[in-house]
Length: 446
Image 1 (cartoon, rainbow, N blue to C red):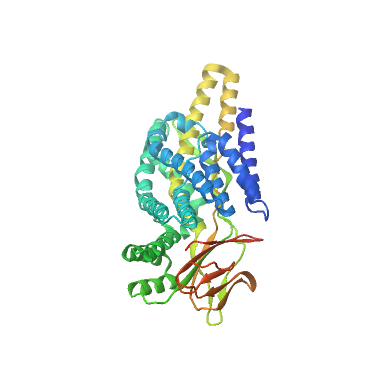
Image 2 (image 1 turned 45 degrees about the horizontal axis):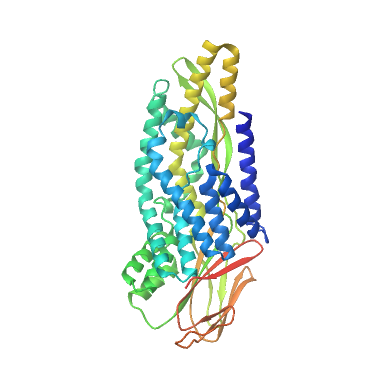
């Protein structure tokens, strides 16, 4: 029991160490090495460590290693999803603490996984590999709604059956709804992401297909992004790809900030059971807002001056999925508490004070919330598009401070060696910038 408590503390310390390294100015290499090491020894959280390792490798420019890590994370994610319906209603799965079980991941994490793996392939010049990953990312988004509609409801029903002898399904549902209304009403503000579609995935996929001789498919994805964001840039792209001209553009994606996470909080809940009303203490995960590193971005050329548009509020996407998970999380917590109360009562009756004490200690030790999730994703994703003009200097700023500058130059038909931070004005370009608090990482995707 004490080993369990120590394990949880050590686990959270390891996650905190990675978090600190990943967001420190010179810590990315340490984040990469540490997550790789943890992925080999911490099998319970291997999915999370592989995901962290893949992101660290991408930031460092180790694209093949990033793909390997993402592949390992994806294999675990798919295996957990296939087993979900079979295991979540089992008595053992309900009694045991979530922290003891393998981390299974959220849909938004799996979609980002394939999205960033597509970037890896683009950066390696592997168009076919990128196409496969964009297809997978979008397929995951399509299946997310069905997963939460069918599998989660099925798991909730199974758990309610386990506790039905002590608390009816109706009473359990009423308790869940009361907690949702009182403690999680802040999650009601993100209806734009209710279908769990990440518009950055749709948009970059759309640009990829539209620029890669599949304009019809590309426009469908850009339409999807426009339907969620109504951004001017995506609207302009729809007009352009509907009637293409010889104009060439440069698109810039900026990812900024640190995504939302979770923290533990406890509530006291009266449970009406056959032999009386019990005051139970539930440990639950609570949504914790992410943080911005910069508040806005703008781009300037001699002929153009515009602000970046917010394409995705990643916190909103995470909150929308968390809200869909909550009925399952709360039902499981209530059912688990009911069953543990029953075990404690039996222990008192048949094993005496010592037995009751042991069962009480077990209940206390196993009553902590599962607050594991990724920390590497941004809080917001921004987009801007400029019309390419040869021999122009382009500057990207945040609140008056320079972030990145580059120049556009006419390139001949054959390949030529360009100077650093110089791109061809007579071809389309897609730039990716990961904006951290003290530095920026720039990648050329197209």
